[in-house]
Structures are given as C-alpha cells and as structure tokens.
Length: 68
Picture 1 (tube, rainbow, N blue to C red):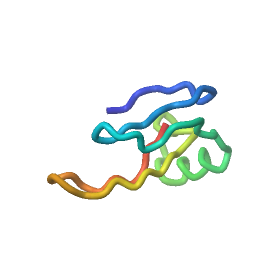
Picture 2: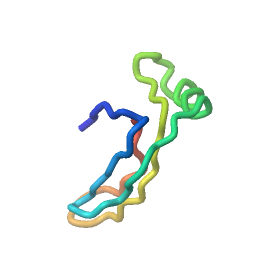
Picture 3: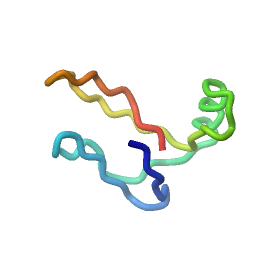
Picture 4: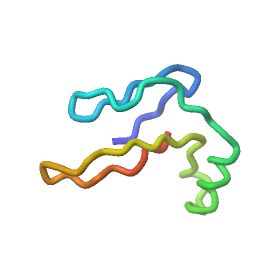
C-alpha cells in the first residue's frame, strides 16, 4: 500500500506490530536523480527513500526499501 507522507514531519514505520523506523526521512536531489535513472517516468518519481531490512518468515519475502 502506498501512502503520501509529509516529509517535514516524523513518520513511524511498523512491521508486524514492531516499530522498524521512527523519524524524519530526508528528501535529496540525489535520491530524485537516482529514481529518475531507474523509472524513466516523471509521474512515478519519489524524492526520498528509506531502506528497512525485513527478515523473511511466515511466507513473506524479505523487504528491501520504502519509497516515499
């Protein structure tokens, strides 16, 4: 599920009821340019990226990242 977030406010990311990240995600030009090189569609660019390691288990795949 993709939700819009306000990058000027702290966010909380919970996975299976446990807090995996809490804080502000920084928006950077570098992230925006990296997204542009991968996606090639300006409608799908994200200004920030958060990597969270999620261990595989209970038939779930390992998580790699969250674009916001």
